[in-house]
Image 1 (cartoon, helix red, strand yellow):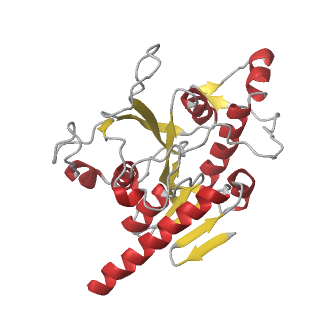
Image 2 (cartoon, helix red, strand yellow; image 1 turned 135 degrees about the horizontal axis):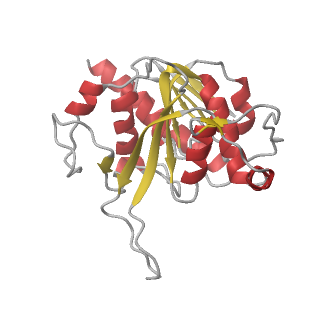
Length: 277
């Protein structure tokens, strides 16, 4: 099942299997919110004869350690989709990757092995985080977002909308002042607006405000945005509203239909606003 419309290419397919078919150096921005166990029936291949670059040079893994990593499904899938994203992103583009303590270590290591340079590590602080009901650990109040680019270039040319990021302000963010440089800690409450939930919800749905801030920093008007794991469609909706062509994949029928409904609604709103002008 596909949903193709002006500025939208949304497919109900396994992104792990579809990434190799995408054009190289095509996307200006990629926002990744990977699910846990983002694997498929794909046969993993690391091209074992190749050297693995990272940490300033070749990373000499012992056979034992590498065997442990290569048998870990989360590591395998992360390495696989990151390798393809490095290929499809433009030298001027960048990749933003959501993570928690469950997968942030794998994401960081895979970026370094693949030569993807980490520009910043952003901490999304959830001031209104849900309390820990068991009372046996600290209340989880943040997530990590890595901002990375292809690396390997002597002159780094990734898009950074510096003036826009500096001018950005939000009444819900008690840390960001208008006219001040954007920090790596973002104070964004985790609650979603009513219209973000009108077609349904996803267990790990992010507030639209998170994607909007990423686009403020690294978006390209008229450019191409890739969302490999669409979920509820938040990042695609934000990209469409920003003025980008949006491409995405979601394998689960329930969430494909949810995201499709949100995209159709956002597209109609965009057309209505243009007509009003």
